[in-house]
Each structure stands twice: as C-alpha cells, then as structure tokens.
Image (cartoon, rainbow, N blue to C red; front, side, top):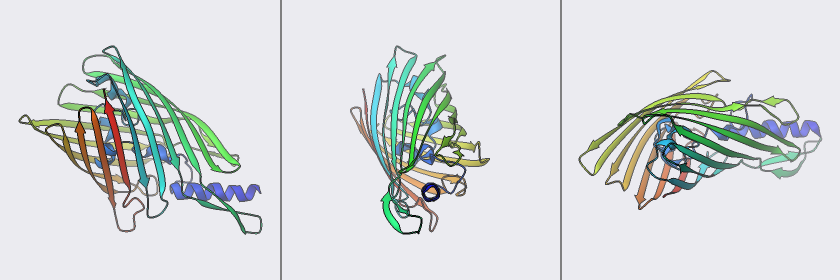
Length: 306
C-alpha cells in the first residue's frame, strides 16, 4: 500500500510541476490578476490587497486605510485544469504600519488510486493551502520593509499529507515615479509526506518600475523583474506595461521567461481592469508557446479599497 501512495504522490507532483525535488509550486503563481497580466512583475506592484503575495513591503506606502480582495485562477486548463482561489488584504495602523492577511487554496487535477495489482480503486484530488500573516513598516518616506509568516498544508493523497512553515521578506524603495523592490519568498522548512522531504520553491526577486503621467487622464506604468530559484539555481524574468485612462480603465501587456523544467514556462500575458469608487475588477489571460501547459490560463480578481 505504501508503494501505491508513493506513486500517487509522485504523479500528483509531476502534474503540478516538472520539478520533482520541490512541492507546493502553487506558491509561485501570481494571486493577483493584474500582476499575472504584467508578466508576473509583482515585486514592484503598487500597494493593493494582493501585496502580501506581490511585495509585502508595498502595503506601507498605500494611500488608503486598507483593502480586501478575492481572486480565482484557472491554471493550465488544457492539461491539469487546476484551480487557485485567494482571499487577501491589508489594514494600515497609523501612517507607517500595515498588517497583511491572506490565504490560498489550490485544487489539483484528479488522479487515479490503484491497488497492488494495478487496478483502479478510486480517485483523489490533491489539495494545498497556505495561511499567511504579515507586517509592513515604512522606515522613511521612501523606504519600507516587511515580513510574512506562512503555514502550508499539502495533501497529495489519502495517506500522504504534510505541512511546512515559511517566511517572506520584502523591501521597497519608492522615491516618487520610480520604485525598486526586493523579496525573498518561501524561505522555510521542507514538506515530508512520509516518503522523503520535498523543498519549498524558495526564490529571490528584484525589480524596478516607472510611472509616467501624460496630462491629467493618462498614465503609463512599466515594470521589469528578475528572479533566482534558490534550490534549483534557475532564473526567471518578467516585463510588463500598463496604460490607465482617467484612473478607471486599464489595459496591460506582459511577458515572462522561465525554464519549464524548473518553474513557470515562458508566456505572453494580456489583461484588462476597471476601477470605480474603490472597487476594482481585473482579468488576465496567458498565451504560451505551442503546446505550452500555461496556454489559456485565466485569472479574475475583485478588490475593494477603503
């Protein structure tokens, strides 16, 4: 029976990612549709309800008291059809501090369970969850830092469950129209399902962004980001461009580079957004190379800033 569940765990991990030495790859997916549509350049994304997953330090610069959001992503619909749901937000305390909260729920594709003779006896859908709490502090008017503590639950089979504790660290420099961000994410323990430990997808990301106002109603935002996968020595990169009209309508375009054997594969991204009186609705769509697993992935997010 142990051999059967070992095979189930490996199969489930393989369906989620090609990286067999790691698990909980859902932690690397953008929870924010805006970030996804801009090539995954979340490390320099402006403060919003998804800052806990973009760059937690950004929340300290928010001009509003707080924000709450929910998002849903259909990931790799042509292959795994996995689902990622997210709830997150932040609340400012005074002029310099902010508390961040969030939780992600990732439902993997269904897998068969077999007995010792190879006969199918049932099915199982692996589930992974993260629960996150963070704190951001604005040290000066242009520099902030933050830390997030994360608890991860991973259930890859009926008798194959594990947990881990990890942390995110963030820095942001925001002197005006320029922003620079640095994060270290998923730094923590391993997950052991009873068949050996699996690493978390820890990574370091560095990015820069620029805002250009054109008159009173037009705004252009550009962002670029590079990342380093700590355990697999892999590199990632992303670029994004956003046009905003009258603080209401947004159009976005982005591109992401990544080794498909070590993380999210290369793709282009498109997105739209609409904001009115603190409510924001965003959508993202991914276009991958021919046969790419990420092609046709979709993400939707609804945010309320107050």
